Amino acid sequence: MKALEGKNIILVDDVITTGSTLVSAAEELVRIPGVRVSIVTIAFARG
Image (cartoon, rainbow, N blue to C red; front, top):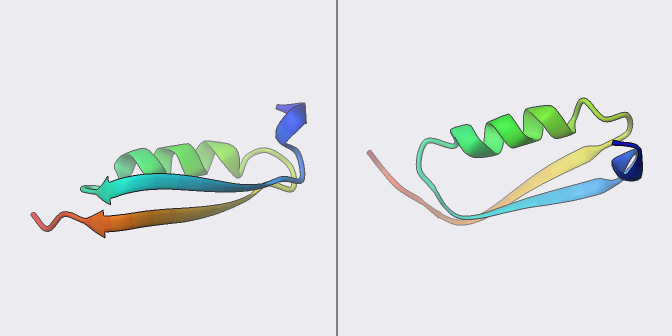
């Protein structure tokens, strides 16, 4: 997506369980030229 090229993106999740959703989203976003992704969460669930 041209509108996201060169942007810094913060993905926010309240609780990380497996992390697979955040990983999938981040993997897609970093395919866009110049995009940097940060992940912020409040807590994580232990399994």
